[in-house]
Amino acid sequence: MPELTGRLVDTGTAVRLRIDDGTIAEIAAPDHDTDLWLAPGLVDLQVNGYAGHDVNTDDVDAGVVGGLVRSLWAAGVTSVCPTIVTGSERRITRALRAVVEARAADPLVRHAIPCVHVEGPHIADADGPRGAHDAAQLRPPDVAEFHRWQAAGEGIVGIVTLAPERPGALEYIAEVSRTGVVAAIGHTAAEPSDIIAAADVGARLSTHLGNGAHLNLRRHPNYIWEQLADDRLTASFIADGHHLPASVLTVMVRAKGVERSILISDATELAGMPPGRYETPVGGPVELSADGRLALAGSQLLAGAVRPLLDCVAWTARHTEIGLRAAVQMATANPARLLAPAGPARGTLRVGAAGDVVAFRVDAATGRLDVDTTVARGVVVHRGGTR
Image 1 (cartoon, one colour):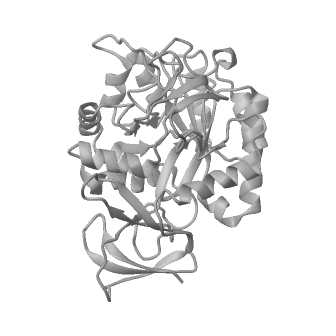
Image 2 (cartoon, rainbow, N blue to C red):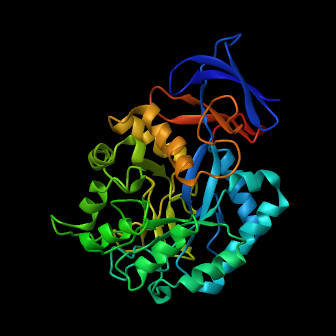
Image 3 (tube, rainbow, N blue to C red):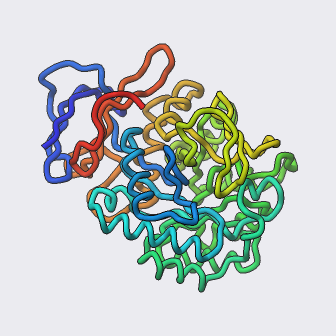
């Protein structure tokens, strides 16, 4: 029966929070003071890997998936969508089965993974929009393949990112949306009319908007403006200081509104690793700089990210007008609402909500957020120390 004392991020109110049987049972006045802040456990819709755990290797298994979840607990993430990127159908289905096995082996891992995000392989083949995805594995949207994924993964796919200009994309978006899966627009070279048509048939999300795009883009109209303007689309953003400048993130969130904005990490297995040159299963050779920029070797093209979601929250709060309260909302309540997984509500701290909580301290000098305690489904899964 964990109890946590701290100030609620959304109100600044000091409280004592008691969790019982996996849910928040009581929020009361505290009996002592503390420098801790309390927020719902973070919900990350896009994680390729973390701390050496990669769901996109050919030999991924349940141990890798479980290790990914456990490593993220120390970073305050209690709900994660392992993200499988462009690859052969065989590799995608193997990864899906690994997730199913990991969830079956551990109830806490099952709780932590509400669904899987499949990013590709139905994306644009042009340099820039394709990003670090394997050009040899790109293919048109195929409804039959989607249903084979769901059969292999026992329905675990919850988000699919694709380019809506691909032949057959609109029929694909309509079908996956019919099944309750979030159809997301990303890695696209679409015309504005393609964006509108995708939203018309059910697309609900823009994946890491402003990235997975051409280095040089027509001023207007273009696919970024169109997605910003369409209120039917929620947008996710990588706020690590490299993928989007602070001014761009500020303007994009102003356009979408906080309620339709989500922070994601897009973290790779190199998160937490020292600077250097690495070989990855997705992008091949990549270079990780001392300031945390991960790029395809010999180019300026980004190859994913190496900051956990809490760092993205901290960067957003420090470098934009958005502030800590809204940044936390964009990493908790908003993504939880998009997924709406079964069970007690996630992404909120109220009586009856899921017992997913992160307690952290704010470094006044740097703005860094350091996790003190993480509770997942009422179980203390991380306590003490810094990442």
